[in-house]
Image 1 (cartoon, helix red, strand yellow):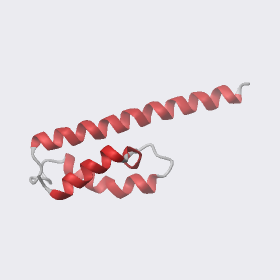
Image 2 (image 1 turned 180 degrees about the horizontal axis):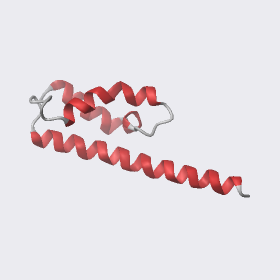
Image 3 (image 1 turned 90 degrees about the vertical axis):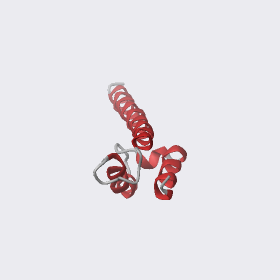
Amino acid sequence: MNKGFEILLGRIESHPDEFNTFSERPRVSRRWLKFVRVILDPDRSGFVSDEQRARFKKEFEKVQSDAFTSEVLAVLLDDSNATT
């Protein structure tokens, strides 16, 4: 397994907030985005197996799904606070 991939996979598992593209701190998510794009693109990452790519993609999509839900709930909460 590529060491950089291994490090990034560990990072997304331990610090998912840094991979949140809905983040209030886009500077943080942009730090990793260039690596995410390489890993998810089979033409640019021949050093990553399809199985590894699928595992990373699953983790990344989980982070995005959770972040999306959190953002929707935050907007709903803001709306309910604005009307009370």
